[in-house]
Image 1 (cartoon, helix red, strand yellow):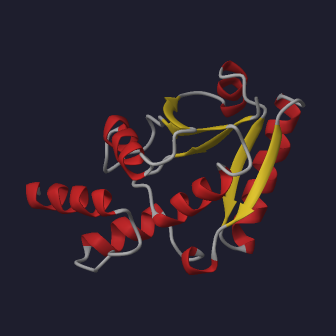
Image 2 (cartoon, helix red, strand yellow):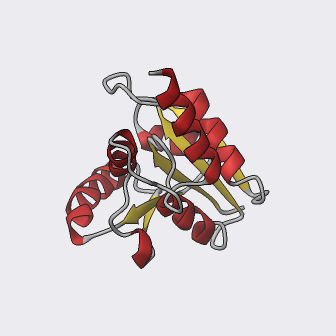
Length: 160
């Protein structure tokens, strides 16, 4: 079985992430969307909320699993018996950072392959950070995130 891992913070998941996931599932028998638990960051959504939003956004894809992890990605990938890491690229500026991480991951575990997918043109400017900033300043994010994410963003802002 060909199993791949698509890691990220997904705070929140965007339609750019969804695009990469929908294209990745065509390449592998199983795709694990792995939410990074980073105690050094202050996310808008809890890990549990992010995992639930991902599941809700992708409930039509039976070969997608959602999980979370801490520590080194290559250790997680080995632990779930995957051999491929999926990374999305939006622009040339992403490549430099992703290239460095890919080389380090390859050094740590030479059995793991890293596959880069270019995001679709319409999402090339999109990031979770941009979504939070635009939404937080009263901008419309319709069509940039799944509907469940937009609803959860509205809910979070009402509580503030």
